Image 1 (cartoon, one colour):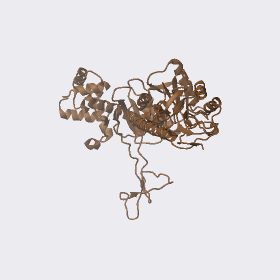
Image 2: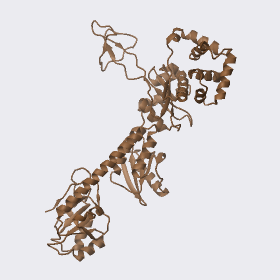
Image 3: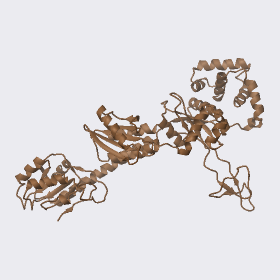
Image 4: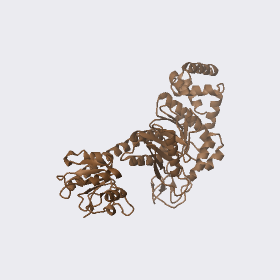
Length: 540
């Protein structure tokens, strides 16, 4: 009677459908032979083979019952034509043949040994004291151990990849960790084969070309493209995986060997890279990205406001990597995604800060006043499907809360400078404020500096009068001198920190501050003078 000794998900001949079940790592034949208690001995055929499961059969032709990858155990009850028998096993994809001696055959037939040698099928001699069920149990135990090792490896790799994804440069970090885990090359390619990021040893030119061609196969530029593909070139194993997001990005891998669990580890990386590299904006956000560029190029508020779709409040953020490394578009995009926005500008050139435009927070809750309640006492209630009334006009049924400004928070690996929440008409000024806030954060080694809006006593002075007074007081100063004075005062008169913030020598700071005192005819060591100048500089 033919029946498999254990389930597995390995593929086989087209006539047979593999049973469902968890995938099991293949067992090298050498590991089974190393179990001395079994007494197995290889007497013919190659030494290398991978066992997917065990099958026992005494049929003259077991081909219809094989799925491929089996260690077939037989005592040769109906063995009449060894050459034909071995040929059918090879056609079925059997991994090895275990032949039990006695009681049918005293020794393994010489014709069977010759056939296995000639057709390349490993042949094992099973001693009479070793039951076939004992061999099946040994294989099952080896598979369980291999599965445990694979799960531990995948778990460690998953943790390492997740940690890499949390770094300030997540895409290069994930690729580096993936290349380390697989012991090969990991690259992120465009649909045209352009390499965006890569890590690990570069394969030889021919293998690299084959990998690029394989990547084009899975790049989702046309319907019906496969999600993954594999190939082998000169002993190098090649794999390509399409990333989600519809942008044609491909994860390409080149390794010298394939191990159990590699595909699962690569799958984890595909998910992470799809999230990190995917465009964090839909079709309706394309106009907003254009608005950011136009704003940074100096477009008028009248042009910007319709594209942004909201009057604000908006926050401008300038950011630099803490380690001083430049930020590419994918790394900057990951920063924007962590802050909750797709409006990121990272293409101003090397050495320039990343600029992010952060819009209002979530939509405000509807506030409905019940009979006998004032608007201040009302509690929010959901009103799905209603149009949003004017926030400044309370109605008999309720009032609307004004949009809450989004609040930036520190990000690991980044130094941030943020403006105070500002209306869309003042974005250009907020951009300059954010640049100064970033300089202040870098000088003080703070992860985040947020410019505080004018408040307290300063808010009691009408803005027009305050601005006129500031212009008159600071008129003798040039723009560079005013910027130096502002930075110096914000850092409490620290020469060294001001030099770091402005990127100049401390003696240059001393000369500029001395020149400011001369032009203004003021004693800059006097706290009253400093206070008045700070008030004026805050108005510009």
